[in-house]
Amino acid sequence: MRTTSTLAVAALATPLALAQDSSSKRGLCYVDTKDSSTDDAIWDGSDSDLTWYYNYESTPTSGIDGSKLQFVPMQWGAPSSNTDMTFYNNVKSLIDGGSNITYVLGFNEPDGCANGGSCVDAQTAAQTWIREIEPLKKEYGVKLGAPAVTGSPNGFVWLQNFFTACAGKCSADFIPVHWYGDFQGLASHIGQVNGTYPNMTMWVTEYAYPEGNLEDSQDFYNQSASYLDRLNYVTHYSYFGAFRSSVSNVGPNAAMLTQKGELTDIGAWYLGQEATGHKPKGGSHSGAGQVAKFAGWAAVVVGAMMFLA
Ligand SMILES: *[C@@H]1O[C@H](CO)[C@@H](O)[C@H](O)[C@H]1NC(C)=O
Ligand SMILES: *[C@@H]1O[C@H](CO)[C@@H](O)[C@H](O)[C@H]1NC(C)=O
Ligand SMILES: *[C@@H]1O[C@H](CO)[C@@H](O)[C@H](O)[C@H]1NC(C)=O
Ligand SMILES: *[C@@H]1O[C@H](CO)[C@@H](O)[C@H](O)[C@H]1NC(C)=O
View 1: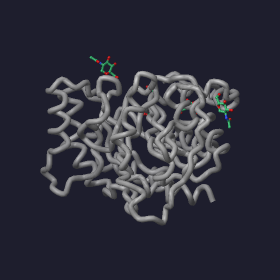
View 2 (view 1 turned 90 degrees about the horizontal axis):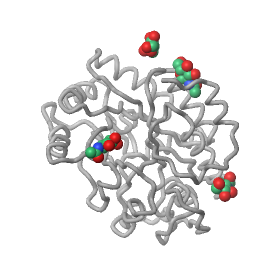
View 3 (view 1 turned 60 degrees about the vertical axis):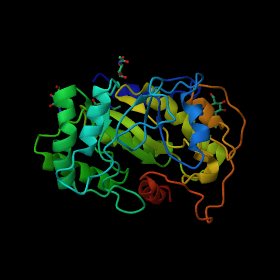
């Protein structure tokens, strides 16, 4: 790695002018909602600059064109059986079938045990990794993303326990990072991860400024996009907000789509387009069924709200 602290300081101090520019680092954190079948075409259309996606699963999303957005499989949690090979077999089938699988992601928020975290202890995660994930590297040269812990202090403890439990048999190639909070918090968290794992590249696979007003949410988006684009050791990032504002669990203003499924300004900028001026509106969060099938991320939002307070 050749990134220096000078670069980081420069990134922080640089004006926001390039926020709407495209970046090959950008991917889609795919969230399956009741409107997905209608909205999928937004992400892989010819005017979208996104290059990759993940959907918290080991198999691709049928509505997303894998020739446009490279699919990155994820082993979301630990299977109940310690001989289960579903993840390994699914990824092997994809590769054998000709899919260009060059990366996989480890567990999603294994340190989160409420509201959808995958809640896996470090020992079980290490055993599962050695059985199902590590062989993909040995046999196919796939690059491996470490477990994506929450942005809470406990996340660092869990990840260290995981590597200890691995006893050198889990050769992660990069560290996925999640953050919910303001921009200074994001930059500081990334710095702390870099300080802890100085020789690893990072993917920021979930991040957003939850429950902010529109201007602050856009300001956060602009600052973080510039920052992540300039930071050499962050090679990929995926903003958390690929859904309609009316079903958003991170507040309507963080969403990339309005309640009608149009791109918001943030959504348009993220895809490399000009601002749309479409204003997101919230839905009735008290109404059961509004928030559809979000995959294991709510725990981190709850954690982030404590940091915001
Ligand atoms: C990341 O960590 C490396 C190794 O400690 C350090 O040289 C580098 O300055 C850090 N990068 C930033 C942006 O802080
Ligand atoms: C497969 O994906 C990698 C990483 O994104 C890319 O560099 C490579 O060109 C792709 N290969 C093919 C055959 O598309
Ligand atoms: C990082 O890489 C450098 C140079 O290869 C090496 O000297 C150092 O020990 C590594 N640090 C860690 C924490 O692995
Ligand atoms: C964000 O960046 C866009 C595009 O550069 C700019 O038009 C907009 O005013 C910025 N918004 C904020 C709140 O910084």
